[in-house]
Image 1 (cartoon, protein in one colour):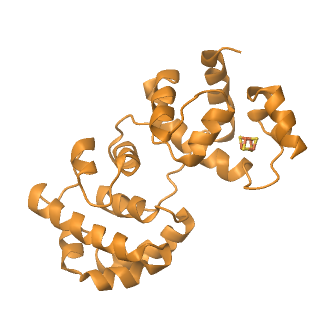
Image 2 (spheres, rainbow, N blue to C red; image 1 turned 60 degrees about the horizontal axis):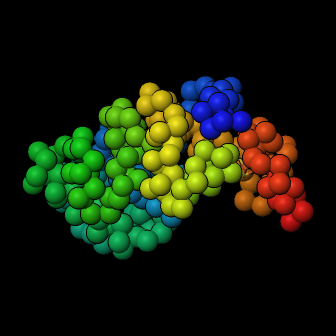
Length: 216
Ligand code: SF4
């Protein structure tokens, strides 16, 4: 099956299972989303959603966050892991938002990626989910699925992002990002998954690869 035909069918399967995929991280506005996405690095969304209500009860704006001492932020976010680095980044970006962006989260990828603790993926998620800008944030799970589904031969997330952007129409990118996240959480267990029973891999993955996986 050609990649373009596969992409259409994959989008149909994802639409059937996840017609209106929710944004997994709880937030009220671009700033609280930015902080939540930053906290989600190497942490589950469930854990982040347990931690952010306490943090945002103390500070939910860059103004308020910039007045919190870093050790206080660190204690509040400790369950998310990497709390020293994340606390420093949250305090630092809050000050930069105040000093350079009028207390607002910028709408431009470059400006977002210059903030401490904000890489390309975090910036893409914020642009997509806070501002509706078409992006296709790729994490390691989406990278793996894209390879298994024959949508990308990318060796890293940047190459996979380029392939997915070429393969799917721009207006589908933001929704597909969320749909693949929910697909992974629903269908892709870390261990003992059965490709032949998967709603996408069963037909999209090469037969030889399915057989090899099942022998393991
Ligand atoms: S469930 Fe398994 S087989 Fe299906 S996409 Fe996820 S990893 Fe692939």
